[in-house]
Image 1 (cartoon, one colour):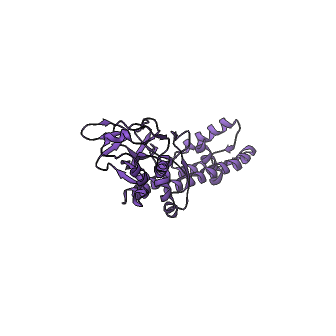
Image 2: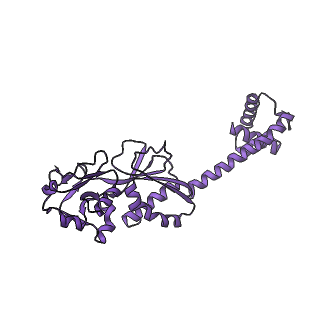
Image 3: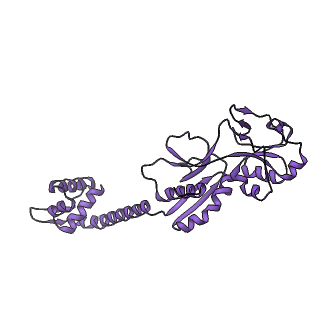
Length: 297
C-alpha cells in the first residue's frame, strides 16, 4: 500500500508516469499496475490518463492531500527510527534484584547519565521473576542459567559468596573453627528458592549442616541482619564490600569456598536476542561491564 501511495504522489508531482518510473528506477508498466491496484482497492478512479499527460480526478485531488500526509509521516517515522538505531536515546527500562541493584547498579547510574544524557532510565528493583516481553523490560540483571533461547546473557561478575558476620556477633558466638562448626551458629539464610542450602566447594562438594537462625528473602535483608549482629550469612562479596572495608563486618572461614548452590554462580545482564540491538541497550550493558570489570570492553 505504501509503495502505491509513493507512486501516486510522484505521478501527481511530476505529471508523468514515465518520469515517476525514472525516479523509482522501475518500468513504467510497474507504476501503471500499482496505480490501477490502488484505484481498484479504493473503488474510485484517481487519475485520468492519456498517451501524453495525466490529470487528477476530483476524488484524486482529495485523496492526494491525505496521501501526502501519510507518506510524509512514514518518512518522518523512518528518520526517527534510524536516529534511535544510531544514537543512544529514549527510555531504557532496567530490572534488577534489590541487592545487586542497590549495591552495584545504582552507584553507576549518575556517570552513565552524564555520558548519555538522552537516555531516560527507569529502574525496577524486585526479587520477582520478570518476563522481558510482557513486562516491557530492556535489560534484566539476574543470577542463574538462561531457560529461554530467545534471550542473550552477558556476564557481569561472579557472585563470589563468602561467609561473614559482625565483630560483635563473632565475639559473643561459639568459636567457629571449621565449616562443621556452622551447625552451632545462628545462620542467616537467603530465602530464595533453591538458594537456602550452603555448600562447601572443593575437590568434593559437601552440603553443610548449618545452625537454625533466620531466613530473609533479599540480600539486603541478610546484610541488615548481619549489621544487627544476628548471625552469620553466606552472601555475595559485592553486597558487603563496603562493610568489610570499614570493619563493620568480617569474613570468616576465608580459606574455604562456599556457595548456596551446587555450582558457582554469576550475575548477568539479560536482553532479548535481536538482529539489531538498540544503542541504548548496547551502551548500557557495555558500560556496566566496563565499570564492574574495571576496564574497557
